[in-house]
Image (cartoon, one colour):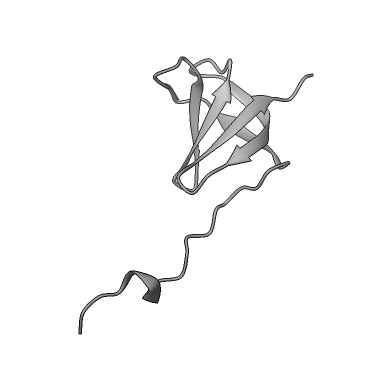
Length: 73
């Protein structure tokens, strides 16, 4: 039987726009943003620094990544 792309359920994104979550910045993206991961999903954090553990608000999601901003303290 030939595999068909539409036989597979779409992946479930572990975050959605508006979510506030705590993440640890583990790397830096090409444009200088911090990078974190939640259940395998890459989250780019504006002005995030490697090693920070911070709360962020998800501002945009795509199929492969999410984009977030730091929550002000």
